[in-house]
Length: 213
Image 1 (cartoon, rainbow, N blue to C red):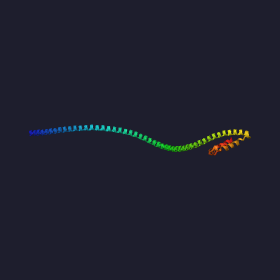
Image 2 (cartoon, rainbow, N blue to C red):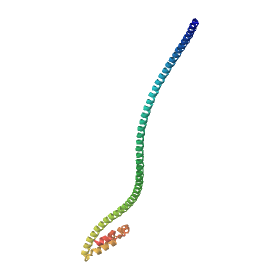
Image 3 (cartoon, one colour):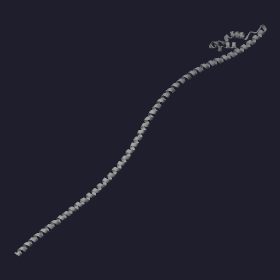
Image 4 (cartoon, rainbow, N blue to C red):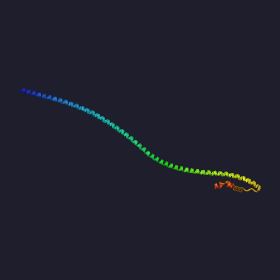
């Protein structure tokens, strides 16, 4: 019976050893599989961590670009606003200047019209002055002719008076100068002709002037 017991124990031991070997083999296989999975997980984790770092760097880079772009945009917006304000100011000044120029243009047009009117008046006055000057020149020429005629008549009258005085010395008392002038005027009417008819002014009548001298 002891031999049977030993045989049973040996058989049980062998079975247990076989089961242990099987368990150990399974454990090794499982451990190897776990190690492979762990390595794979670590590899994936490393890749994910690297990718995460890359994405983080990209996010930081994009943040920096965003803030830089935002700053540049703000600067550009400020500059554009200043330019808009400057252009608006120039526009307002241009509008004011345009209105002033329009008013000045209206004043110039009124001044031009007034100048044209004054020029027309001056031309009319100038033409009238030319006409009046021509008339005065004609009158002056006529008066100069009358003066020449009067001087000639005075000379003739003086000669006649001398001759008359000589005759009166022989035939009687000499006549007065007025009587001699009347006699000369009577005898010289044909000589004066149209000259006495051209002027109605008593001062332009040579006979009257001779009588008054």
